[in-house]
Amino acid sequence: MPEDEPLKSAYDLAMERLRAEDREAGVEEEKPLTDDQKQELARLRQEAKAKLAELEILHRDAADAAADDPEKLQKVKEQNRIDRERVESRLESAVARVRQGKS
Image (cartoon, rainbow, N blue to C red; front, top):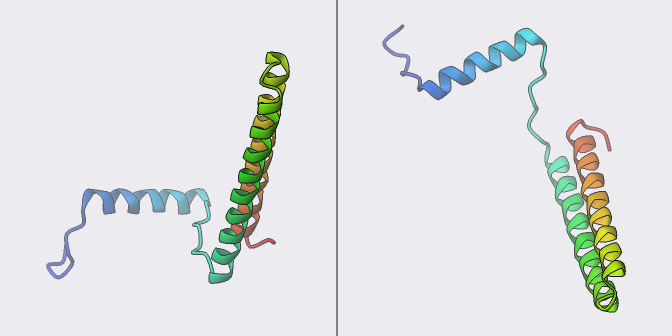
């Protein structure tokens, strides 16, 4: 090893090995996001956050209305879970499209 080359940490050596394995396996490296992509991701996350807040308010109102009926309350809770999962799933899909360079 040349003396002018700094010593590498175990972490750096491990990362080099992993990158070499990825190159051999044909795995693409993740490219840095552009400013436009970062802005789009921030917008998407903000929209999802707002939608989740809206769902929470609607869920609270529905849960209050169904408080006397355990079966109805359970249905309200299940619907809230489904709605939240749908918003989160759509966000994940949109984020993946932006990261791939598709809009």
